Picture (spheres, rainbow, N blue to C red):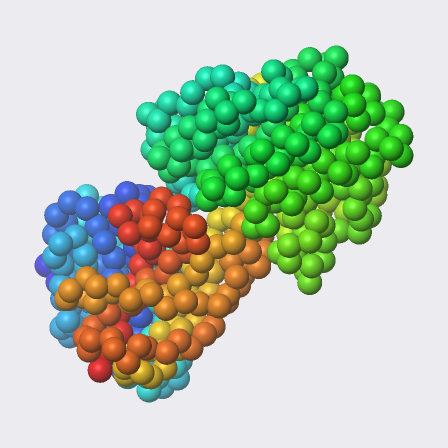
Amino acid sequence: MRKLARYLTLLSFLGASILVAPSAALAAITAPSATNTATTVTYQFTYTGSPAYARAYLDTDRNPATGFAQGGAGADFLLENASLYRHNGGGWSWTLVGPVTFSASGGTARWTVSRASIGESATPNDADLVFQVESPLETSARLTHVYAGGGDGGGGTVTYAPTTADFPNPERGLYHHTGDCDKNDFSLATLQSYRTGQNISLVMCVFYLAEFRTTPISQAALDQLQQQLDTVRAAGLKMILRFAYTTSTDGADAAKDRVLAHLDQLKPYLNANKDVIYLMQAGFIGAWGEWYYTQNFGNAGTVTAADWANRKAVVDKLLSVLPSSRMVQLRTPKFKRTLYATTPVSSGQAYGGSAVARLGHHNDCFLASPDDYGTYENAAVEYPYLEADTSYVAMGGETCNPNPPRSDCPTAKDELSRFHWSYLNTDYHTGVLGSWSTGGCLAEITRSLGYRFALQSGTYPGTATRGGALPVTITLRNDGYAAPFNPRGLELVLRNTSTGALHRLPLTADPRRWAAGATSTISQTVTVPASLPAGRYALLLGLPDPLLSARPEYSIRLANEGVWEPATGLNDLRHTVTIS
């Protein structure tokens, strides 16, 4: 209690009655967690430096008006190093309860406390927690520990602290645009720097076929496409892919039959590289592949029934040559509604492989005018349709013109969220993105594009037997604008704490169903392999790419403090189970 005594001496000297802690700083404390058994509670966090004191403030009645005020909690108990204290009421006034099990080594502080000592022994309960180290004085954000029920032989509930950090995750976020992908080679070093230096995991390749409007695609061009895909794979990124014939508003594209023949040529390349193709935009038709200025498919919005049939033939062919696990985006809602269905894809249809389930949308003039430069024809109909449809299909694109106040932060955030945007061009339009930066929303938008999964709590047993049941319940929230739309693995991983050996147990939940803005729960009882060696096992959660499972950078990182392992691509659930 030496440090507490010094505080009391200082207060007496100053004639003060309450010690006010310095403002919170989170740099030194990470990965706070709390677990419990039927009789004990374990608190833990990691820290930097070599502080002399580690503390945990326990608000066991979760009433900030009672106990010692700290970080939004009213602490009824205090753990300081190896001692537990009870608050006496008033200001800084504590009574020693007794010693507790405490360790502080390797940058981790850990306490194990009797539940009876803190008045939490009768029934499952909860508590607010604030952690602290000194010196220098660093204080964590408040978190809540929800107690697991007793009698599970060492099991308990772990609560997880979220993070607002920006970090790269596959198949979401800002992207860099490459409009001459058929001519200029990607640089491996540059692509790698996107990920490591800018937290960007996507690059767009607009591959022009101008020389082949009336001939087959040359082998040299196909080899160039393969080389670009190989470089993207080596860099740990994924590609947004579009083909087009012209950048001119004269619309010098290819006739329908030539487009279909080119798609036959491209089919083996699309299949061989589906692992790094994030999605395809329909392309092929018109200037930039955006379907407006075109010599062969109905020009400048004048589209006959025959033109619509030819457009549909191109999309049908594209869907047939692209692996069924990948989506295709159309430039406006009108295109999908005209060619396929006026009703949005339903939950039952989602991810089933049909055309309506695989066709998404891209808006390449987001917020540029009242109708986004012709993206919308009837917003009263198309807005509700798009909002529903993009719950299950891909949405993304770029801005193209500053148009305040529509292009400012309030509308941008509302429509990015409403229409479930997964990706956005960071290169264009810089005026719009610059306005988001000065308006204070760019960082939030950057974090929120696509999915952003954050663990909230997990309940796990303390013991299990070989060949027996291991029930887990994990609650997480999707704080992003969208859910993933490509297939994604999900597995509970057991790692032997002595040998490091990994054992992967598939979970049946589908991350594509973890809706934006919603909380989802994984609740499953897995069977421990009978051949698993007895011992203690750390629990981890993996969300690997099914086609790139050996590449950790293609696994999903959860938005929590202290759970991500970049070397393994796994998220540490901060719980161990003993297998006998």
